[in-house]
Image (cartoon, rainbow, N blue to C red; front, side, top):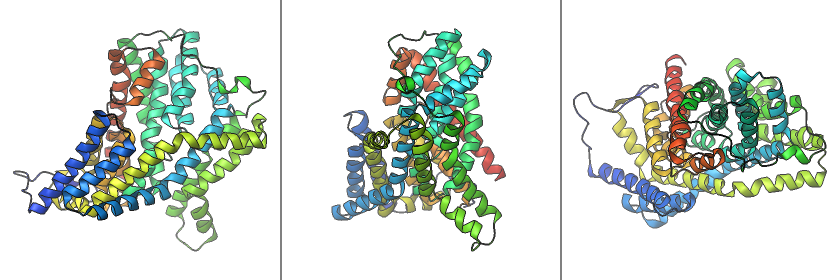
Length: 465
């Protein structure tokens, strides 16, 4: 199997399954995923519980004892939370400091003040991309909605023309760029290098955002014409503050962890002497935990103190940032448990055995699996975690760059066609005052454009790196 592709279809016909063991494992994997999909979509069960029950069904159908299944699940859950959970928590703290201090509003106001009317959609894409780096998608939407509505009103432009670039900026960052939970979980499952994934993720995200944001927004505005709803104009975080951080300090703080992690990736390539001081220093400060921790500590001063926050106010902000991520941590952890159950039952080995006779890119396979789970469950996080666990064995013989590209392909697939089973669909519908057909024509199609375009850029990169 080459680093670029694995083989999916034999020249004449699909190869027969070699033994009954593989048949049972295939049925077990399908049963586990089917249970998860049904519990989430039909019975509206929380994804954490659905993934937990689905893991049990997977183990039982595969023939593993209940005790072994529980051990596999808890081991995977623990290792995933240990490696990813701290990073999610630090990202949430950084995002909360950015929002509450008025730093996000400062970025918005500064960019919009220097932008002409014709470039407003591009400015909204830039704002959403910057703010979307440390913020979860739902938080970013709540933060940007007042800005999108006000800009649309003042400029007289279509709400869709202004809003689509902002939504695209948040969604692209959510699916492709760590330290968001989905990409982090996929990096952990596939054992990709975070610095390489981050660098390639930014490289894929920028042109994808341009196409799915401002360019598609112009097309979508011709399909749907809605006026900004008056009821959706919440107050901004900085309205009650006497002062707020500077633009330079805010952007510098947000980009600090990205710069540190990219610097480590660059030093790994350039510096040959692994015992040199430069290599050892960047090997430490460029690790995700240290990079994000450094950004949080710096943010307490450049954002919190700059906004006039007292020590107690900063502490309260940090404390309030952790509660809302409990559900995300549990979902990500349960996804890790499901992934480990797949591996321990032998599903990963089964896919690896089958792949020797297939003729399709491993990147395309990962994308397709993520697409199917995304469309079925409505959850990008469940899709990226489940798909990365299934295709992880295919990365064993891949180079570091292609392993990172596999993460991005799965992340792109997890964004495909958001519809009525996705909470984000209803969030966008209500905030923008659209009906269901209008939301499908704008938001759902935009998500599909992001997914397909990102995959295209990933496949192009796989030919040259």
